[in-house]
Image (cartoon, rainbow, N blue to C red; front, side):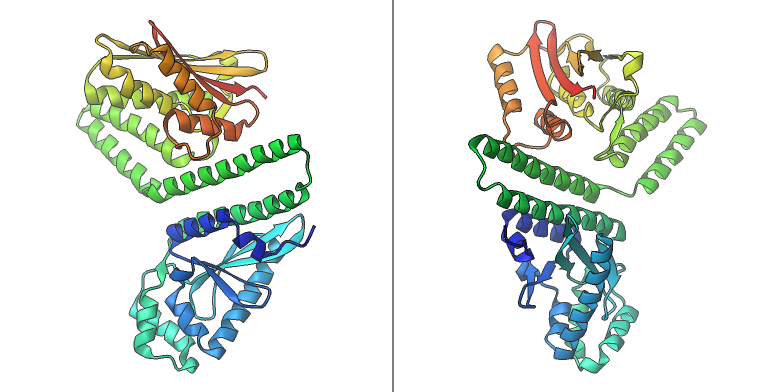
Amino acid sequence: MGKISLNDIVTLPAFEEAGDLFYRATGMTISFYDENGKVVFYPAEERCDLCHLIQNNPIGKERCQRSDREAAERALRTGKAIAYTCHAGMTDVVVPVVVAGERIGCFHSGQSLDTPQTSMGYQDVRNRLSDLNLDSEVLWDAYNKVSVVDSRKLDVAMGLMSIICNHLVEGEIAIRQERALTREQRKLRKAAEEMVRLERDLREMELKLLQAQVNPHFLFNALNLILGQSMAESASETAHLVGELATVLRASLSSVGSMVTLMDEIENSRAYVQIFQARFGHEIDFRSHIPEDLRAFTVPSLILQPLVENALIHGFPKCENTFHLQIEAVPHDGYMEIIVMDNGPAMTKKSVSDINASLKRNDHESKLTGLAGVSRRLKYYYPKFGEVRVASDMNGFRVSLIIPMR
């Protein structure tokens, strides 16, 4: 097997997707030095104007290369992505690719700012580059086009890019090693490739959730202020709903991609139902039956809320009397079944069969929300066992999550 190089990685479609994702999240391009010392950019058409302007000057190009080289050496020593200040005063990122102790190389970001552009900031850049004799007007224009990146978002994007790049290298090494495998072994490799695609999709989903977040501290402080004011005004129902909203938002904003206890998930679902009931004014009977020894069992966060939401959206409007919604956990031999059931109208056998068939497909293009999203997440966390099943009869609709106990 030949030595893996960055050139091998950037030809993979997944790398192009990763580079585009990083650019959408940060506004920064990804580049690397090929075997001939030439800088290659992804996406090439979005190359930073300031970086281009500096590197058109031989002295500036040499400084950029030295700055990149020093940062790359630091990153390869630690094996972690780092952000650093380049010779021009901009923030750069270097992502090392190290697999099984072998240093493959580094990917570098384009330049960015951690604070918005100012006259003082421009003057600092101009002073750093004064000996390059760059046109002041052109430099000013290029400086104002540099992306401004929030440091928290940059940290997350760096981490994701590091995971993706190293994962791609590991995948390429594995593919080269397995080219002569048997038919059965190829089937196993195909399953592994599906997991790679699934992980990339889930990482992108988590990054999109991060991008959509408002500052949690500000949000919860505002909710606490409203809660205190409601209690001071004796508006107990308003205070109650604000508290429930805080519960739902805390679960949504603070636990993306983590594991939580089953009772935390139940509490989040209960709060969601309370808010829904206050909005529509119709009676909802929500109950949960969780054995004592299963209450601390950990599950992926936000795994039940989509099922509760699905029941409220599809079953609740068609229920003429009290809408009953129940969650229970049933232990079996080696696995646990979490059941979300309601008394909404029954579905046809064909509809139920079609849903179950779609949930069993390993179609990586399927969406990441609703029942399909829950199914994909279970397959990610429990590749050999996680499963979603649906059933329907005259008593209503039922969704079961199958999760291994170990």
